[in-house]
Amino acid sequence: MNIAELESVARSLVPSGKGILAADESAPTIEKRFRSIRLPSTEENRRAYREVLFTTPGASDFISGVILFDETIRQKASDGTPFPVLLAEQGIVPGIKVDEGARPLAGFPGEKITEGLDGLRGRLAEYRELGARFAKWRAVLAIGEGTPTPYCLKANAHALARYAALCQEEGLVPIVEPEVLMDGSHAIERCEEATLAVLSLVYAELAAHRVHPEGTLLKPNMVLPGEECPRRAGVDEVARVTVRTLSRVVPPAVPGIVFLSGGQAPAQATAHLNAMNALGEHPWELSFSFGRALQDPVLKAWQGRPENVASARKAYHHRAMLNGAARGGKYSPEMESAS
Ligand code: 13P
Image 1 (cartoon, helix red, strand yellow):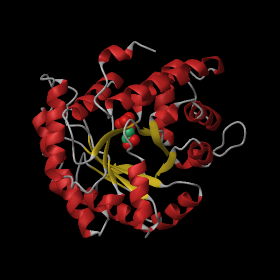
Image 2 (cartoon, rainbow, N blue to C red):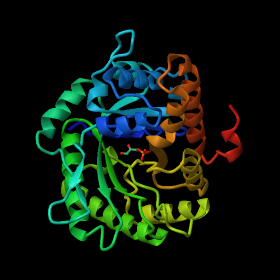
Image 3 (cartoon, rainbow, N blue to C red):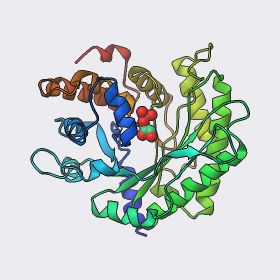
Image 4 (cartoon, rainbow, N blue to C red):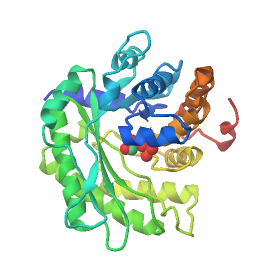
């Protein structure tokens, strides 16, 4: 294991003013996203869409890395340049989603375990060959009556740690993603409790698996009330509770925390990230690894039409710029309408 390289890649993903684009939607997920613009999910449409994102001029001013899906890391731009090469040429680090999805956890109705450990060592070696320098594995925890159970938390934390150890062995920086979903009507306090519980177990398992924290990144949910909870939380409350939760369990040795957006509206995710950074200095960089919060406006502008490529690129650049500003607590809602 080349520890110096792992540390340097991890740090290069969280420089000031930049964050990560999650463009690693699996086949069923991208199909769902394309359905919102009534576009069939063919291989060529998926390729063309990713090409719009990866060829946006100036995106690398705000984007440090891009997470790809297995199909995408093997695809090429129209001029024949493989996507990982196209990104690396712009100084953007290519990454890869390596989990194989969350499936029902046997014996625990309503709960899920993420699969994909079998054969992972071999797949990681291939992804590194293809240009990936970091990876992602997502565990999903749902808040419900009596859930998440301690067993589900432990099983997912264990899988995340096995994945992370294998990544570091293969020279890839693992992004560790335990996502507490915002589905439901629970109060923010329950999200705080579940997030604290899962992160405590994750860091215990990572240590037990001898994972080197300086060569990892954490991708957590923000601490939010459930989507259907009548008591909404203000931006400052979300920022304060999220940072408090993280500060209780995430070792300062971890270089960066890159939040997922989890279904928040794009401007809301940006405002939350901004408020956390505006709180002052933290032991880790607080950044983004957004999927929907970066891409929703792009898909809406693109609609699958070549004549819309310029406005789609503009929408992506704008959203990336706003999140780049939020990295330093320099975003304000008035910037949303400026182009
Ligand atoms: P969202 O930002 O849309 O939650 O996606 C991030 C991600 O990569 C989920 O695994």
